[in-house]
Image (cartoon, rainbow, N blue to C red):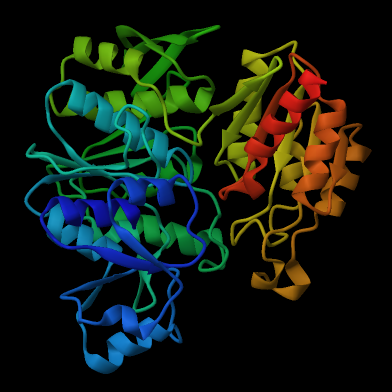
Length: 455
């Protein structure tokens, strides 16, 4: 929503908004864009009546501004429809979808296209470091969008990516998520089948070969399909992977033929897969391999994805958006590979609508295996989960203990900070997992470590 607001402003519209609990980095971003945000909701915010209201998907009936909009017949639209009609239409639409890797893949894709002089428009849920913002309004042929399967608005329950008119689609993987709107992985499968069915015959679908459900769905595509993965059964695959202190190198093959050696600054097999998806799309639209190589080598990553927040007294504190057990496990595995001899602390806040539920209670036991110690925060807003199916941090800690893993549940964020202040040592790695601000824990830890070192 913040990126879309800035995009409308760049088109010459006067833009303002209403929200609750706005926090960095988006609150800071909106301030920089000089876009006013009312804290809380009030019908008075609709005076004078705006020409158009874009309604986010967390807003529901009963909201006082929504009720006023409906009563006064003020024009309103969902975010995905606004994006489609005002920014995507008239461009080649490249939609990055899937349970994991959407933000990094779409950011990487935008950077490669921009580096190659394509001047793409884009809208991404996170903030690519190379652009410093999650959007671009440009004059190029292509528009790149991170397309998720979450619903569009209270008046449009269809998955957002169904509104983006895809010409080229990427599906990294498909797993169960968004338990607040989907009852099963079968429901998610239906949404992705509808997405694939929208890609025209002259388009392209790029799909993760190692995800069985994604590959099964791709067979129904009317367009050409190219797969990617880490084995030679994929159309695009990587071999001869080498990890060093500054990144990852690998050879890229297409249909068994070696195309080039790639170097990226990122770590983890999932980032190699993300790169392969980007390479497949860039190659399809005619970007030369030399430009792809140079762009990927310079790609800096995305805020809140393996982002180093602080380095205090030899302790590195990283922030990661991971909240699904697969994403948590793969991120920790990449850190274990990068820092094989380091002591790794994993800090976890169950915060999303799915993580508040006990759906992945047992899956998280395996997810935290690569960590040395696991510190678990309380469930954020447990009142938003069904009473009989609330995720149990205490049980996760107990189950990890039974696997001989050092794990502790804490009743608040400050207790986690106190524990780390007393026990973390120089050379340790601290990695936080949350899709929210995690109680400003990075700043709190940094301040405590600095005071400790001074003393």
